[in-house]
Amino acid sequence: MPPMTSVLALGDIAIADVAALLAGYGLTLSMVDDDAPIPGSYWGEPEAGLVGDTVFARGDTPVHSLLHEAAHLIVLDPQRRAALHTDATDSIEEEDAVCVLQSLLGDALPGVGAARVLADMDAWGYTFRLGSARAYVEADADAAWAWLAQRGLVDARRRLRLPPDLRLAPPSRPA
Image (cartoon, rainbow, N blue to C red; front, side, top):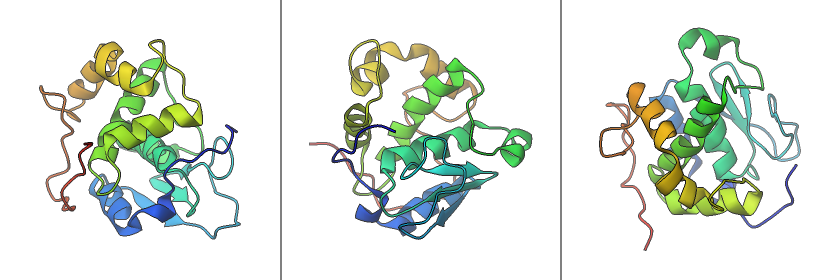
């Protein structure tokens, strides 16, 4: 597990907004007690976990972790999603696209934003060829953007396509 750093935790934001965002994609957020093990956590606590269409988390789960794991479920077809437990990665291409998608999902959450998700990814220890998550998303992720576009998750201007019934507060924007 990466070293503990000062990253935005789920308990720092409105959990109802996170649950609504996930529900828009047909996912369920299941909160577990603060000291309880997190089911389906690949890296162990406090990282989010996956079982079927459920994302498990605690108040100390990093938001970027929860969004990363949720993004894995969002890109899966229903058969893969139903059978999933803990390890969602199917390919390098999928993993790359999920890294982009998690930042876009952060931008959809009030009080989070893509910039915070990308900074927290760096603080947590993600590594990218250009040195940062932001540089990857902005200058090195063309294949990931195309992968997301082919699946209808982003538009031609590289904006997240939210589910039509989803209603959240306006997204935060970095200053």
